Amino acid sequence: MLMTPSDKNTYLNLVNTKENKRLNHIFVFLEVFSREGGIQSYVKDVFQAYNTLSEPMSGEVFLLRDEKGCANPFESERLKFRYFKAKSSQIARMKMALALLKRLIQERPDHVYCGHAYLAPLVGTLCQPLGIPYTVITHGKEVWQPLPQWTKTNLQKASQIWTVSRYTREIASNANKLNTGKIKVLPCAVDGDRFTPGAKPADLLERYDLTGSKVLMSVTRLWSGDIYKGVDVTIRALSQIETVFPEVKYLVIGRGDDLPRLKQLAKDLGVEDKVVFAGFVATEELVRHYHLADAYIMPSQEGFGIVYLEAMACGVPVLSGDADGSADPLQDGKLGWRVPHRDRDAVAAACIEILKGDDRRCDGKWLRKEVLSEFGIKAFQKRLQQQFLSSVKSKAG
Image 1 (cartoon, rainbow, N blue to C red):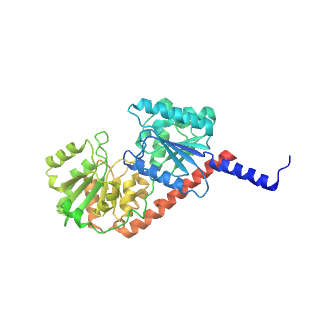
Image 2 (spheres, rainbow, N blue to C red):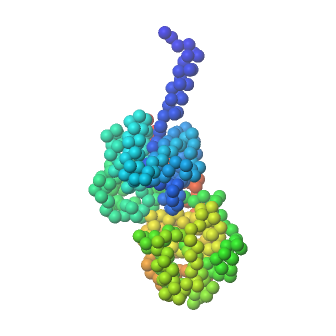
Image 3 (cartoon, rainbow, N blue to C red):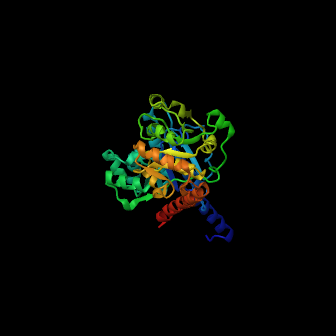
């Protein structure tokens, strides 16, 4: 029986509709909406990029530790979310594994993106027998040391590994015998429409008693398991800085179980009147707090350090450590000061230089222009779109 032109058009429409609705990508993450941090910011930028793809694609996101009902602005026709948080972490992991296996068998997606090395054994074990390629997204310290053998094996068998900085690429490949040829650097991004320069807000100056002060600022989790964010080093440097700038104050934004130690350190050193612990600041209020800063100081060890981008986009000069992934956002020192991260004297000298304001890296307009040209959200979206499109094309080929 021959098809009429009308029948043929109907058939083609059905085929095209089915093709357009097929699942192209699956993303598997630990948590995105239940906590805040650099990793979470990066993942949200990935979601935003996916929702702005120029070609029709569809994806599903599996979230191990987030729960249904959380604030999620990225849910769309293109990107669906599934939540697996449970009272028992083992039950949550089992439920997610079964649901993921079912979808992989049913849909045979073009590519799976594993959002953390911790999840690589699960994703690799399920994808490899089905012949489904997968990419593992790495962020920093979690891959700087030798990993358990099963995790390492599934990283090695991944079709691609994403990481956020050249430093992490080199350290991770050496520590875990990874092929650097399949490690792609996809740096973090900053939204220049959101992070903008501005005057010091009068209400915040009053709240923190910062009127007339030269303000150094850090934004970080104060966790005793990771004391190398440099807050303690900066506190130790204050006595030297105040010999040149007696009006200096140090605003620390963040919360965590290391706060009592840091408060006691400031007291013991006689600089407690110079340190302001602001506690947790909501994301929507963070930009106004950057406006308070004369310098952003974090002599740390970072996988990348998105906070440096945020500060520079607001026109604030920055200081980082010199042996970590911050080499990328600071462009190897072109855009900011890099010092040995545990060296109090080096931190003090750099802070004094920044507060004097004579260096080009203190020019807020120039700093913002440079950082947005390389790390703006549009450049990030373009890089990711190329990756997503290539994964579909390679599968089709």
